Image 1 (cartoon, rainbow, N blue to C red):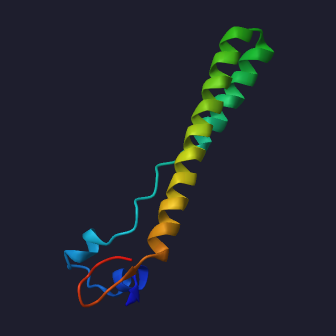
Image 2 (image 1 turned 180 degrees about the horizontal axis):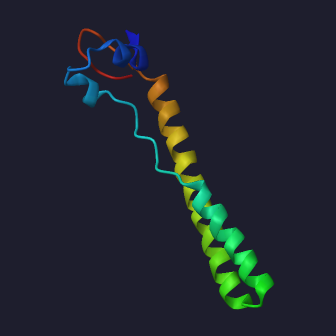
Image 3 (image 1 turned 45 degrees about the vertical axis):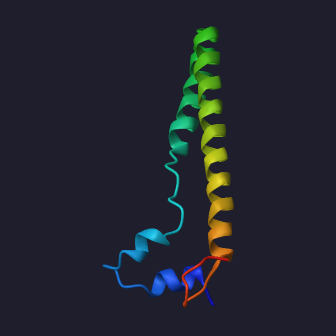
Length: 94
């Protein structure tokens, strides 16, 4: 028995098992876009376009919340992957 993360790191780069036992992929996050949208929404509201500002600001908040949820989901999956062990005889995961 060995921790899956250690086993995966010890595999050679050309091994097909590196794909099979790889950690979950990191989510694409672009927090700067969400912050920019919220900032633009505030700027629109200050300049007088309140409805447009609210729409842009709320869209930025929703995008930020979706990115945060994706990161939380990734952290859970990665924690599960890190806790797994692999049997070196039969290659089952536990």
